Length: 147
Image (cartoon, rainbow, N blue to C red; front, side, top):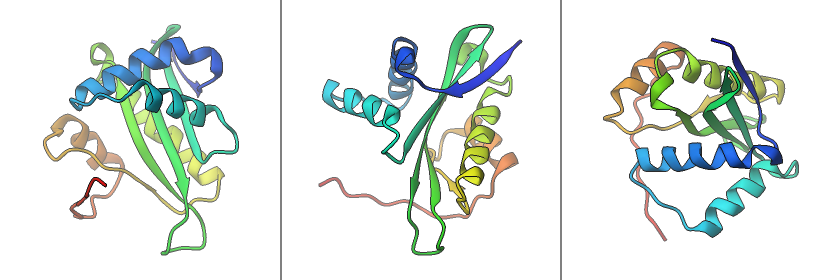
C-alpha cells in the first residue's frame, strides 16, 4: 500500500465530495448544497483558518481531514480543532486515520499551535480506540444549543 496525504486542491473536488458525503452519512447528517459549497471554498481559501488534506492509497482517494486554527483564552498561541476525519470503510484499520491525525499534528506544530483537539461520538468505539493511543482524553462533556 502506498499512502500519500496531501493538501486538498481545487482539482480534488470530485474526490472530496463523495468522501465528505460518506462522512456526513456516517453521522446521519445532511447539509444543504450551499453549506457544502461554502465549506469547500473556505477549505481552499488561504485567507481562511480552515484546512483540508486528502489521503490517497495507490492513487485512490480514501480519506479526508479538516482542521481549523483558532484563538484560545488559555494560551497566546492558536489552538487547532480537528473538525472532521473520515476514512473509507474498506481501508479502515490500516493506519490511514492515524496518518491523517499525525498530518494535522505536524501542520499545527508548524503553525505554532499549542494543541490539537477534537470531538467524537461517545459510541464511536473504533475511533476512540485509536484516539486513546495518540491523544489524551480530558473527560469533558460537550453541550450545545442550536440557534
